[in-house]
Length: 149
Image (cartoon, rainbow, N blue to C red; front, side, top):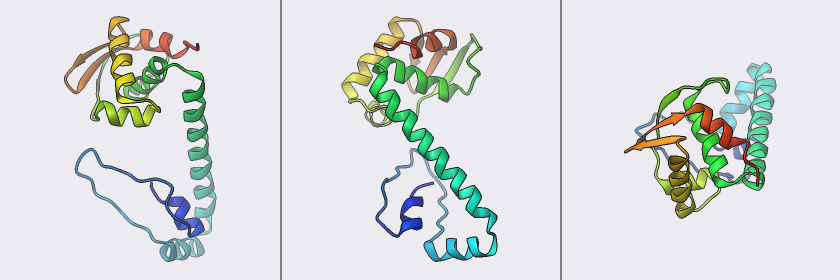
């Protein structure tokens, strides 16, 4: 979801979005949202829960940028892509459908730092790169996520 803050407070959007593949987009404007809330008041609760989760995610991302080295942030990102439980110790194939520049924007780092971090994860045996796919060692990535400088 993009533009939720602007549709709620009438201000400008705080973020943009770029699709990495062909996408179908649905738009719900301010007037339509107001009618929907009037017709279904329970949506307010769901909207508050959604916004609270967004705030938690943003707080976690800022904390990650402030506390963790780029390799740990990248490892956390790869684990999130793998959608596996922390206890898993398997090799998992993960698609990476974004450039290093885009990955840097997600992780709060420059493209060169992402490049070095990918190399370091590869050297550590945590990932193996195959074009736009990576084989991830879940246990090694988990160990790297805890690496606070």
